[in-house]
Image: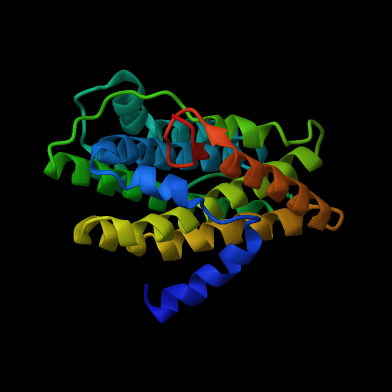
Length: 255
């Protein structure tokens, strides 16, 4: 890890309430778990893009623009959920457009739109990169169950606005920060090609967490520190507690 990336990771390590347990690194880095790890990583990239599109469709875009954005994900969702043979993700990626009509005059609407569109493009590009690595190594894609992490994070979200939006942005910040920390944690234990790939993702993932957190601060009518601390504590519990399945965001292996 270069000094440049070490400085990039420092605020992330301070933001997260705990580091990745060594037991997770030991299990995730086993050669026999590589297909599972990359498969879940592939799914995580799609879920990140889906989350960003959800924010835009619910809070910013008019309905035709929102429907157009849903179509951005179709080739990826067909592959993940229907195991479609259509794998033309490059052309799908090139079709992404920023011509989205903002339906309201909220002071943060343009900021949310700009940051989420960039995030979507990057996450879908990472999706393609992971899939390419799997293809090159002859690793098949097969459906796997979701981890408890995402649902566990969503349980922390308040059910009334604007606090629900702010909480979801904070949760997304923690998910992105944890992804970045995990990429850095596992990279030294992988082969040179994979290690280089995971290190290459650090900068964009670090910015994603900052973007989500910045939006939460901008949108909230009050200081978000108590919610950041509460959600961070919950995230740390999910990472530190025993987990019956290995996933990219799973806790301490208990199998």
